[in-house]
Length: 146
Image 1 (spheres, helix red, strand yellow):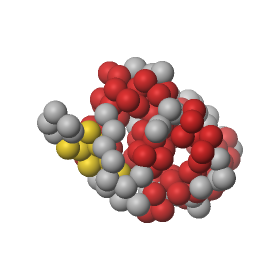
Image 2 (cartoon, one colour):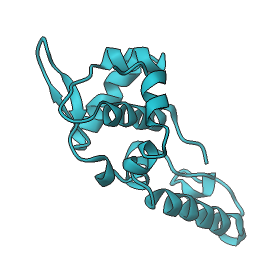
Image 3 (cartoon, rainbow, N blue to C red):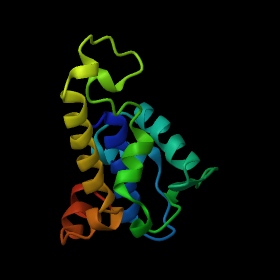
């Protein structure tokens, strides 16, 4: 299973905002600078996270974004499902499947079971689990959050 950059960046935005805490606003540029990633990629990610209700945005000169819900209410498994456009780990999961042996091949069920196990593990965790691992001060320092 490969998680796309889109999902990776979605998680990074949420981690950054959770480390900011409270009502403090952050900008896309601050997050891009902290992670040394593309501001343009983050704009799409932030739009999606806002649309899904994970974050709220404030427009204007002193605007920015913050978490819209507590970190313990943001489920990692659900987030991955909402940000990954294609969880088809093999072609036979796709509506465009062209493999001739699909009806008799055992790989489909094996990969289906593996995908379900992968997502099941992620379903056990929230954003709070990601940030509450005893390394908050190190994360704050690495992200240059004052």
